[in-house]
Length: 179
Image 1 (cartoon, rainbow, N blue to C red):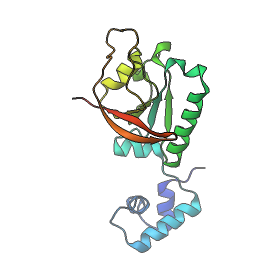
Image 2 (image 1 turned 180 degrees about the vertical axis):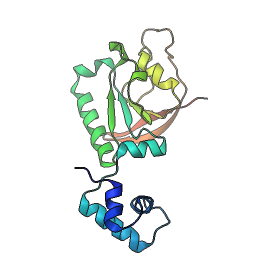
Image 3 (image 1 turned 120 degrees about the horizontal axis):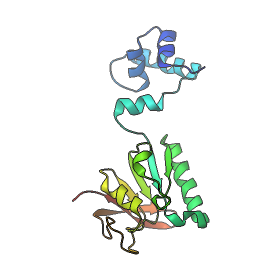
Image 4 (image 1 turned 45 degrees about the horizontal axis):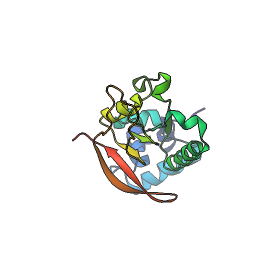
């Protein structure tokens, strides 16, 4: 059975609001109360509900990973995906691997994310255009490469570039933004 915030509060003899303040490191409870709540939460095995936190913060709490259609042919993409998943997991952020739009997938039918990571985006990929049209952060190692022209796909989308470290030195990272 899952331990709830109400269980922790009841164990310590405080309100759920006080227990929430203590667990989230917010002001409004004494240091002694915070310590008692944190100890009880640990002892009872309380884990915050990610869906509840997402609702409260108006954030999805996840990052979407978009890979090129060719990702199934090269092991590099599996290694990159595992590295991203491990790094995000250490930060407590779920990763949502999105299917490529070339297979008929529509991004608007998938769970919401707070931003995207794109590996080797192609300007003729309708999913890339769909992602860049959203008002969300986008990080990629390269600018979308032009291929064959597709109506609605931008071959030169607006981006702001900055340097980001990679396992092989530094790579370019771009964050999409509306100019």
